[in-house]
Image 1 (cartoon, rainbow, N blue to C red):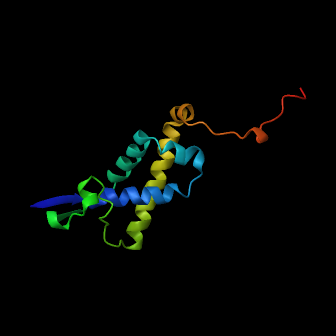
Image 2 (spheres, one colour):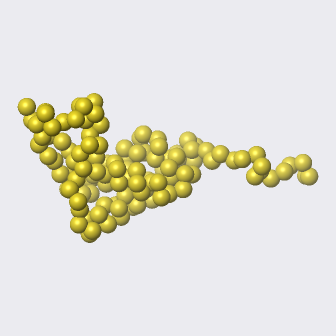
Image 3 (cartoon, helix red, strand yellow):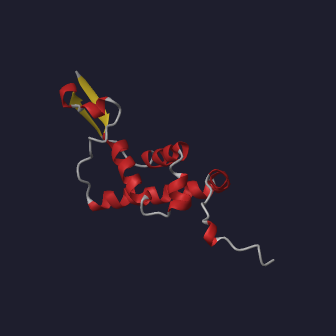
Length: 124
């Protein structure tokens, strides 16, 4: 039996994770830890690039892929121009989503303030 695997989505998810790690925790990493926003970013990028699929036999699918994690599959190495285009789309998506949903994000993501950094109300 053969299975069709969408290599594009798995590659995008990995690239998004890598790029988000370069952003500050607040609000970006915290915001995109919310499943709905993460999915919106994935969809934003997927709608702007071509998809690549691969047909594999059931014997080639590792156990972890059968359980729903297809991170095992990677897209073939991309030329630099394609890689930069993908990274640019991810950055655009992050900025656009944060801009469009800034109020929604600010209500759901709170910055942790350390007590030692808070201004003192003791002196008036």
